[in-house]
Amino acid sequence: MSTHIPHPELVLCIPGPWKSYKALGAAVAALDAGYVTFGLVLMDTVSGFGCDIQLEKRDKRMQGAFSAAGAHWQGTPAMQAVGKHASVVYLIGYGGTPANVDAMMKAAATLVKAGGLGVKVESSGIAHAPDEWLRLCDYLHRFAAHRAMVVFVTGMETYSCGMHCFGLKDAITAEANSVELLRAFTHYLLTEAPEVRDGQTFAVSEDAPVYLVRAHPGVQYDEGSLFANPYGAWYLVPRAAAALH
Image (cartoon, helix red, strand yellow):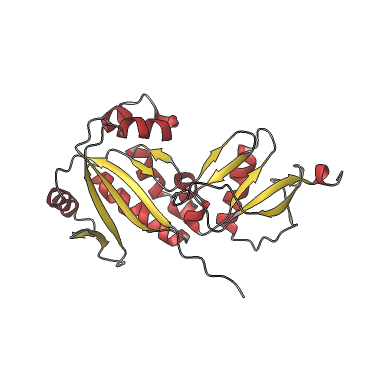
């Protein structure tokens, strides 16, 4: 009997110019883009999708947090603009499926168009500039959400973080220089939705090294961390090395 895992919370952080919930609602309504605010909810009037809104006052740590999570756009005018925010909106909903992620990304794009200064994915620790977020949303049909949500951390082991947003396992390996390996593997998990089982093999291409895929509990985060993946992880081990043991 399979055990049901509740959909993990997905939280997106958008600093912006809004001084109040009323000002935020007015900015969204002015777009006439099919979104409205009802109290503390942002709703897509076409699909019926809604997510919670949490508006907080200016946070002087915000630019530093975005800079740490957005190394790919550090030092840009867009990053400097984050420091000029008047408030911070947190969009709070559920991940657990690609459709949920796409809906949350579109909701965040609406706030970017309404003056948002960037988007930080609190559920994986990556931040994107406003223009980049909108570009990613334009290519959701090509699984651009993978780039928006998933980060790769290097150290003694290399591991992904963010696949739980889609309801999928993350990936880990002890191989050096393996970010592209894990990027390809996790992208494969999302785009092909394969039925992966412990002991199967994976290779990036026909002539690339082959890896054994082993079930793993995943990286252990602090209790309550939004980074935690309740689905676990896949651990990739070089088949050639495994054959020696």
